[in-house]
Length: 169
Length: 433
Image (cartoon, rainbow over all chains, first blue to last red; front, side, top):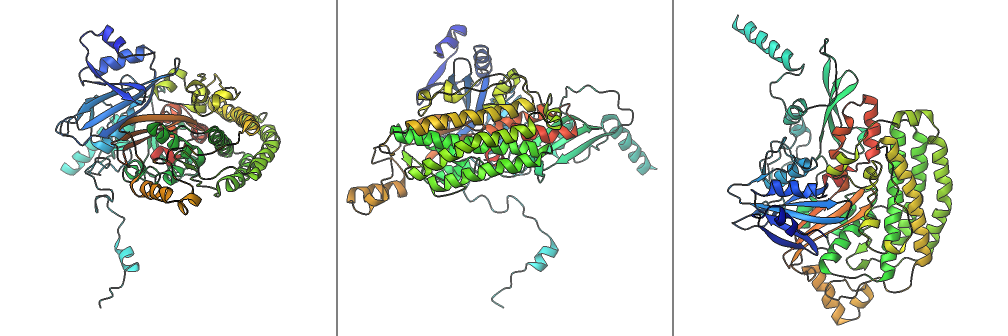
């Protein structure tokens, strides 16, 4: 059974905050530690990066949380690795160099929350158009969207043909 | 004079890099052109490198997938996918509705096997709420999931065969799926987007007629599979078009987060039904199919054999199906039966509270993933104690599979592209959420 204490044996100065994801072990680590911890986890068998995603905690300190969902396909264990960043400086290290699968997942988190992954090879929007200015999964983004943020197709011809008659006249 | 000079400089610049001019490139094209490639090629004397756009409206992309291809003659140097043409923001919607209200939305994710999505979501919520299902409900869920797997695999096999030119197989696979839709109609009341599962149970019990129809379907399935195998398995065109292309090495498949038949075709026999058992799978006898080649043909055969295993599981479930309730007992979390709502005060109150304000949910985080037809389909739910989830993250297998597509296309021919896309079986509703 994997425990984050084994990471501590490797790096004595490493600190983490244990997170319980309904029985599955998880750890919140600092941004400086995450790369070598992730490297260690991969070497200890967590080869599968199942998912990486953001969470908006809606708090001043550590507003965005990035969660990595890792699985060891030999022992069938699962762990969660978490990092946090503030709204003022939304930067976290990218884990693409360790698991190539982090590429799209981190792009998605960037697209939805505006978290910037330092060292990501190709940080573009995943789903939304490139020129979109907002981050839709942030808690302050309205559910209905922002009118006018995505331009609709427009042409003079269409205006003329589908003109809605003004009832006042 | 100045104008000609500028034109000259422009020309030199665009010759040194590639035939595509640099000015105002869209970001996706920039990403494609700056990507490394493993394809070795000769000095391009004719400079006939070109960029070809495929999709989003292309029949072989199985939905609205856009692939930008950089070609050297007929060889793909590298490729770049673009997603988001079917992005409906289901994760945002989930945060703004109760857990029950979200169930119909899960149908629209992997619309080829909606019933498995219902199950995955409901089980994730049940894990968060710590609900235990009665045995009969668990068996019915396994039956539904396996029917959905057969339905999805038939579609995947048929679509792959159609993409490489065997249209008959596609029609025959759809004929079998039509029978499955009739079964879903009887079991759930709906043919396509079923919304059958409820948190803590399911909408209604499976009827003897439903069981009889499943048995009839299982009796006819071996013949249908034999028909398909006779058309394909010794078919020179099919084999030669699928063999040895789109090879995914196992270590890369793991790193990309591949799951399901795609990963098993690369030689890693990983199956959540066996490895992290849920429902009643430990009581059932089945094999985990895996292949070592990792190419298009291996992925096809994986699916073909898994259909047989699913049929085996279904037979066992029908034989073992116990009698009993189909709902967990927890008045604050599980919707009461409609008959009770109209006659008992207590049930009426609970129904009102659950429908209007959502269930009593413990604070915390929870993750549950099950082996859907395309791989691990999971939900990460974060609750702040209210009736609405704080965060609901869909882990979709198609998203991970598509991430490997660019790797598979490197070095392939144009004609292989459709076969490779068909073999990883992406469903855009799921990949785009």
